[in-house]
Length: 499
RNA sequence: GACCCACUAGCUCAGUCGGUAGAGCACCUGACUUUUAAUCAGGGUGUCGAUGGUUCGAGUCCAUCGUGGGUCACCA
Image (cartoon, rainbow, N blue to C red; front, side, top):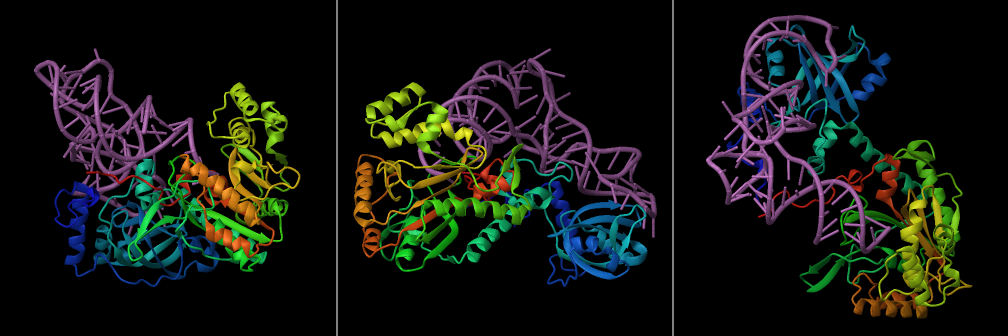
C-alpha cells in the first residue's frame, strides 16, 4: 500500500517547495550539531497556567513545551505563540537575551515545530501575558506546513482523515472531544455511585444477538469458525444478571454493518445497563436522571441548546404510549385495530410504507416513526412498543401484544431504549423461533436463535430492567454537533485511493 | 445502494461566453528590539480529483471512474 501523502518521504522526490524548504532547515539544524527531533523535555507549566497564575508567576522562570502556531518577526526580536494541551501563550524572543547563535536557531524554526522553551513570565506593553525566552530546544521539526492560521482547516474530508490537523488548528474540535471524555467519565461516575459493576463482555460473538442489525463477519483461524463483531452486549450482560450480579453496565463499541450517515457510524459507543428486580418504569426514571446529571456535571446546566433549539433535560420527562402518540399526531387509533388489513389501511391513508411480512405491531411502529418522531423535540419517553418488534422485552401484563418497553427521544432522535427484560425462557424461545422464521424468509436483520441464552434463562433470571444509551448521540447534543462524525475522532471513511 | 452537489497553490477561496491560471494567508528575499490576522518592499510556488472524448483550443462542455458532503432507504 502506498500513501500518496508520504510519496517522496524517503526518496526526497516529489516534495513541493514548502516541504523542500523545511527539509533544508532540518539539515541546517543538524549541521549545527543539534538534533531536529529531540528527546525528553522537562516542562514545569502549561500555557494556561501561565495566564491563570500570572500574579504568582510574574518574574519567575518557567519551562514550556508545545507547538509553534504563529510567528511575528521584528528583526532582532520576535513574537511567537506556543500551543500545548491547555491552550496557547505568547513567547517573546530577543537576540540580546538569547544570543546570536540561539536567535539564528529560532530562525530555523517554523510554524508547526514542537519546541521546548525556558523563559521568564512577564506582561508586554500591550498587556499580553508572555514568556521571554532564555533558551530554546528543538523537540520535533515539522516537515509539512500547517493549514492556514485564520480560516483554519475546513475541508471535512481532510478534517476526518487527518484529525490531528483538525485538533491542532480548530480549538472547538479539541473542546468537543474533551467534552466527550467528560461525558463518558460522568456516565461511569453515575453508575458506579449507584452500585453498578462495570464489566467487559465479548466483542466477538458466535451468534450476533441483542439487536436487529446486520453484523460484521470475521473468522477465527485456529477454531476455523465464523465470528460476528457484536451488535449489542445485551445477551451477555443478562447472563451476568443470571449469575447474580444485580447491577451491571458496559460502555464500549458495538458494530453494525449498516449504512453510514450523519447519524450512523459502523462502530459506535453504546452504554447498556441492567438492574435486577427493577422494571421499565424504574429504568425510565434512571434514564432521565442520569442524562440530566451528566449534563449538569459536564456543562453545568440541564438546559442545552442544540441546533438553535433550547432543550430542557430536567426530569421528569413526559411519557406517552406509542398508540397514544399515533392517535395524537396521526389521528389514527391502533387500539381498535384487530387485523393486519385494518393496519395496512391506516398506513396507506397516511402514505406510510410497510412490508408484506409485517404485522399490526410493525406497521404501528412504521406509522409512529414516519409521523410522530419529528414532533418529539423536547425529551419524551415513548412506551408500550409492540411485542412483534421487541423480541427481548417482557409482555405487558394487560396486553400481550405490547411490551413494557420505552424509547427516549430528544430532538426527534432516539437516544435511549429500555425495557423490562423478558425472563420467561419459554416465551423467549418462542420469540427467537419467530425471529428465525423471519430470518429464513429473507430478513437478515432478524435475531438469531441463541440456545445458550435460553439455557441461561432456564436457570432463572430475576425480573430485570435494562437500558441502552447511544453515547455518541448524547455527545452530539452536549456539544451541539449536527453530524455523528464530529463526535467520533476517526469516523469511518473509504480509503483515500483505490486501485 | 439511489438521487443531487462539490473537488483549482500548503490552507481558505475566485475563475465571466471554451482562448496563455488568480487573490488572501502561508512560504522565500530584504527592512524592522513590545507585536498579536504585526507592518513595509519584492517574489506565484499548480498533474485545475483521474481517465477518455468533443474542439484549432478544455479548469470551463460530454462520458466513465474516484473521494467527500447532503437527501432517501436500512439502522441507534
